[in-house]
Image (cartoon, rainbow, N blue to C red):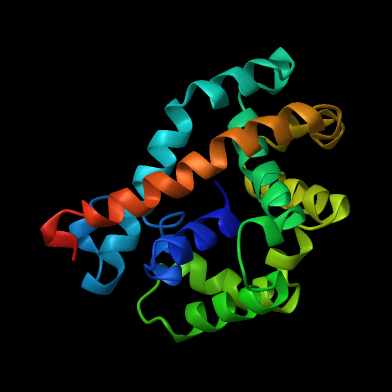
Length: 197
């Protein structure tokens, strides 16, 4: 899952939006982070662990050409954000526009976020990354942005075309998997280890 999905799942589970998103930038042991971030970081890691090991995701990865399978999990995360944005009204009662503003406000108000997240927040808000996922162009820009941040951007060559070609397979996997993930997230919140509450 990428930014929008983690924020939505945090809201779905009534946990901190900022802390859940911080999970993408927080490395090392959860105990090393401020208390107000710990439950969100723990939940983020549960989400990623289930996603990475799920049969639907493994099957979807196998649909990518061999030369793209190394980056397929990243492309799937981004494409799932696109699917969530595209069909947002089916998954949340608040408009996507209103939700994204709430998310940006929560992030701005949260102290002690990881440095890398703090550095990108102004650009994330000014370019409205979360809302941009609604369009294919926004998805392609997100893919290009991720590719440029990694040490081997050549691994993403033609990846936007591949993701578009696999649109039906991606949507099918998203439709089957995401409601399960929403349910698991609500269960995990009730099972959060006491030291992270």
